[in-house]
Amino acid sequence: MKTERIVNTALNIARLGDHKHRTGAVIFKGDKIISVGHNSILKSIRKLHPRFRRWPGSIHAEVAAIINARRKLKGYDILIVRINRIEKLMYAKPCSNCMKYIEYVGIDKVYYSTNEGTIEEYNEKN
Image: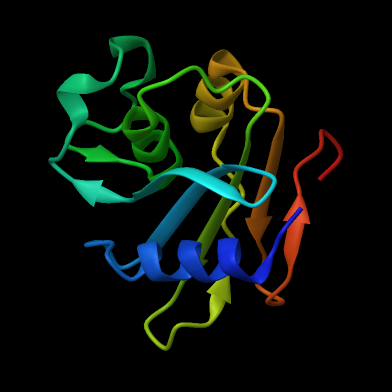
């Protein structure tokens, strides 16, 4: 999955977040990045289908990346990273609502950062 370029892009996008939990997401296929998104407050929420509006006034990074893609996402992968104030990787497994949206748009593989500083692939067991 993860090339250094994709991980670095996700980290750079996370730095743009305006929440204490700065999160960035990158949608990609192979080495080609097609969309990015970061968590934000009061941005793009009206573009999100009401079925997936769980947190009024905010949008998660993975949802922002999906909205920004503006294309069908079947066959693409997504990486989600979260950093703390000293830019250490933190746990970024998608919430259940975001996972429903990721599955809805057909994204194949989901990767996320952990508190140990690693990148894990999402599966039903973890």
